[in-house]
Length: 317
Image: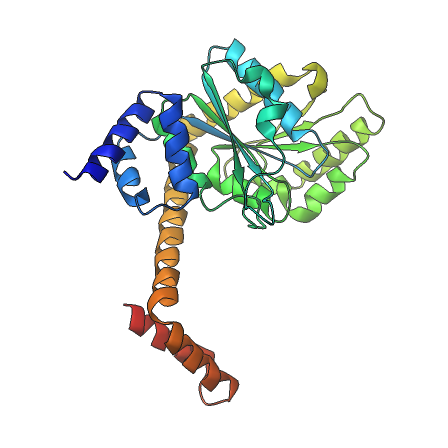
């Protein structure tokens, strides 16, 4: 075993044992798309599948971070260890996270059973970084009971989080047209638990009514009826009910076999994403000149794009 392999093996072993610094280093390797990522992934295999992954999403201003922090408090009161991945918009200059969720959740930073990490979305409009699934693997292997993933809340983040999480919590707020927007965006089909936050404001009941009406007309294949809870996250009101509904959904997944099917589908998407990334890397490295030549022929009307794509694939195989 080379010194490099020994270093990665030791790092993974320490992370699996719950050492915070090693967990942080592994996630940094993931974010940087290190060449050691393949070794890390292999070493994590066999230590995955125990954590309940919960996605939290919603449009900006609904109180996602406040709700996340309050939910951490509730889960810790129930004796669960918690990891939080807050996927932030990227700095256009450094690629780093901008919002500083660790500062917003600083009340939890002294708790050894809570790990909080901000990750940059790096311009990925769906709201989830490419590295997020791999970071989830690290936290899962590290033994956390629950992993909370808070998304940017733009683009297709709601759809993406439903593909990555076991349970999706969609957060809305009154006065923002969220109830109607949820129906338009297709969120009703992918949300497992709905939360109307800031429910002490005018319009909260209207938002809940719009949601309820929309859900009543939405058919779900998993036979789950998504509940709607009212919260005031700044005061912690209603967060216990959110935690209860999340537990109920997880129990439903276990009883129905839905958890296994969701995770198999998730693994399939991850395999596909890795395969596509490898193909693109091969194209960038070895087919750059060929790509320019083919593009010139397509532009000149000498070749169709499908035939050009076949030529690229033949080159990188």
